[in-house]
Length: 139
Image (cartoon, rainbow, N blue to C red; front, top):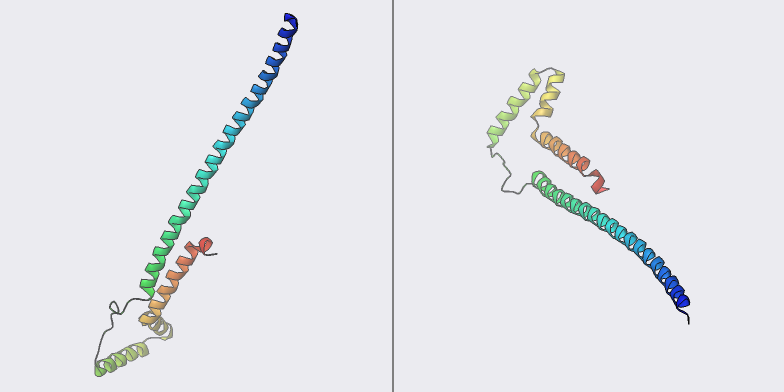
């Protein structure tokens, strides 16, 4: 073979290899960009999961607090023990006081003076606030 023909074949081969190298370099940059995107997506997913876990822990803590508030143990119940005659005197005094009020004042007094109703309304407010806070989490 001639030197010119060999040189021509080597140049063609060199051009072919150069083209392949450029394609591989483009692929390499695309792969690097894809890897970076995947890493970013993974980090976002991880942060989202961490936030959800933190929200679940907060949710559990609030459930415990609400349970303690709504259903206190027997040791925390503060029942006032009175004798029968003390209760009768107290009831008579309360009835006389309510009778001395006009209609709207007596209704307000009865509603505000009833500890069970106050506890119940407070409990309902607590539960509604809890549901509102975790509405998306609960659904």
